[in-house]
Length: 203
Image (cartoon, rainbow, N blue to C red):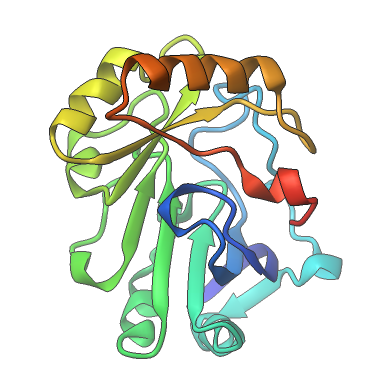
C-alpha cells in the first residue's frame, strides 16, 4: 500500500509517558477533524514536504526507515484516516509502534501491536478512549473539546491522563502552562505534558 507522508524524521518524543524516547516519526497527510475545528493546530499536515523526508511511500519503506531507532510513531493529521494494518502487521516483532490519534476514527482490531495516545477532539469515540494507553486533554479546553470533568472521569477509569497546554507554534504558552499546573495541584491524579520538543528546540 502507498501512503502519503508529509514528513519522516528521527527525534525525541516530547509528549506523554514516552517523553525522551528516540523515535522515527511518520506524519501522514490529511486530517478528518481539520483546522476549522482545531484552529490552534501547530502541525503541518496539508501537503507532502520532500525536504523533510516526506513522499508517497510503501509500508516497507516506512518500516525500514524506522529501523534506525526501533520505534515508529504514526501521527498526523489523523493517522487512522489511512489503513494502517499493513504497517502494523509488518512491524510485528520488529518495531515498537506508537500511534497518536484524535479518537474520532475507528481503531483497527490489532490492539496488541501498538501503543495508543488519544488527544480527544470533538466527536471522539468511547471505544477509542477505552482502548487508549494514555490520554492528552488540551488546556484551556476549546468549545466542544474534553473538559476537566472528562479528564477526571478517564483518570478514574485507570487511564494515564495528561493535561497539555495549547502552545504557540514554536514555544510554550506560559499562561496555558500555569493553568495546567494549578489544575494538577487541585487534582493530582492528572499529569502534565509540556511538549518538550518546544523546550529544547527540536522537531
